[in-house]
Length: 328
Image (tube, rainbow, N blue to C red):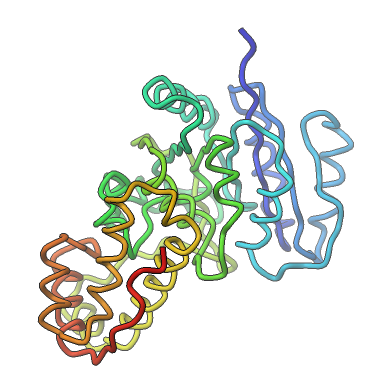
């Protein structure tokens, strides 16, 4: 039986310091039926030259999209790759990480289990933990999930997934149906990985790999990095005082959910669509007691007792007008 091919979508921008090491780790995967599609977003360093060199050396396994006007956005660069991809299974790669040798094979094992359970037509997602490392790949934390207090099981609990992300894109493996569903990614989506996570949770299925499969390199130019929460008394007090930031984050989350309902609400299971609409009511009802009651009834959570308490505090104090509750 022929091994299914996996296409790795590599987004780059001014990454010449690290991108060669990342590409080497991808091409050295023990899953051999693998090829790379790269897209550069207007680099001004040697990144494009490095990509061209890999294409010259690995003509059948490494391809680069033709130059187009820069998107100025990692999210949009990945969307450009997603729309150009032809693979049956897709991974996302950042330019500055290093993949451990069994990353793809470990994820494909889980993908095949998902397919055996749900069939190949359903949008499917597999994602893993990461090891946080410094510029020299020295371990800073053995598990990003533990460092960031991420509960990956939230992918199976939509009421706990709304408003936060547990999927790190550089660990994700998706199938073609999820890719094609994700082409609709709207401006309201914070990043491609949060979008595919919500799509899998509402319209497909997902599986978790508890292993660390990526060395997640931290340096001064990270677009998104791993920052350990400050749980000291001053840190907690500071977060409690910054309700405006939390409310802005909540508004962005609601816009994301509203866009998801607008684009796919009529196609997802009714229970999931109703839960998303309830989340919007929990932030937009004109009655603060109703906002709190809906939040408690559905179990909406931001990922811990302190965050949940701060959420209830914000919901009680924020003045909010009723808006559209049925965009789907």
